Length: 437
Ligand code: GLU
Image 1 (cartoon, helix red, strand yellow):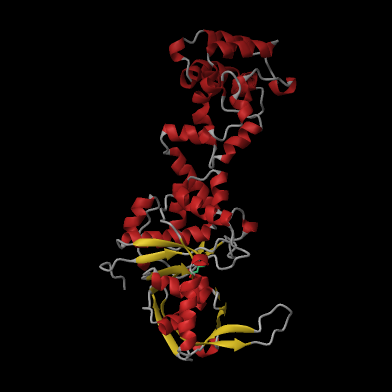
Image 2 (cartoon, rainbow, N blue to C red):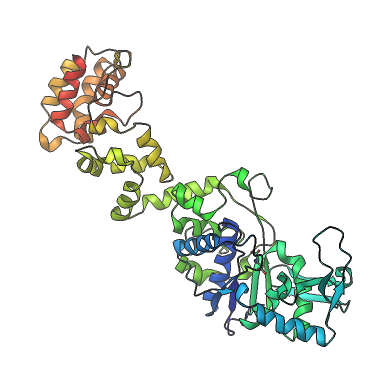
């Protein structure tokens, strides 16, 4: 069905009536991948004919979101700038009897007394969907549908068909919610003499409860995922696998790799599920493999400012980075942990609650042992092996718990050996002495 020899021109035509939705990003992604794969390009169009609901800030959000994930688009076409073009087509259609001005009886105040309707030839249309196969529709049921309010105000179907024609679009890849629009658009194409593009209607994205993905399931806009601390390359990888698969069980793909692998033949017919657990897992896998520099940057930008003001911050941060990273699936958790005071004990003396320390009777002996560890061996493994036999002998909990609490002051913290390594020998000894007092 696919013809790699023809350069595919796909399109991404969002309506700027809200921030870019993850479903919208997936549509953009499939169009982008397909165009790349077929040596063509994806054109970008802003469908802003709805003047009340369209906003510049949403247009900006859509662009920012695409940029963030690495989908490059050129200057957008704007429907609001093409009124004259649509008008020309409308006039021609009216002159040749393919459309007509229709007198309406307004049912409510403010309703129009006149609209422009398409003269439906009432026929059977069949089109080959690259994903769903042949789809047949009798257009009689559609009636003479409205294509413009007046010459200056075209509606969606007309504008889309004219634009796709003028932009040389060869492949229309869009959500299955648009299937019902396709017969109307084909009729208009035939009326204005536009060639019929290929269609591929991609499966919907559902929430795990199999209903439409919406705010009540969590984040829906790309910006929210960015803010929550998902990596852009993860969102791309994850979304590509909703409704598409490579034909084997490979799960990790960069955008470039997807550009080579993607095909419409492997897009499934049935809806896909947006599984946040899988997204979190994937984000974690990517985080584990991030180069140190980028990781540092991503974690640092999530650390609250007042924590960065601790004099020893940079010195300690370097050491605790692995501890932080070990505990997170998304970067907003960094902020939450710091805000909960989780790492405060690395920067300032802990405050002890007596009841938390429990039994301190083994601490003097512990101090002896720690004192005997050489600087070379002062690391989590070295400290553990020095302390282990004694702790095993008198009871591990009896030694390790008070050790850990005297270093952190907290009910929960990393293990005492890691704490001791990060704090250094001098500070470790000082804190244990302090807790004895
Ligand atoms: N502007 C439409 C939307 O955002 C896209 C229509 C189309 O792909 O034909 O849903």
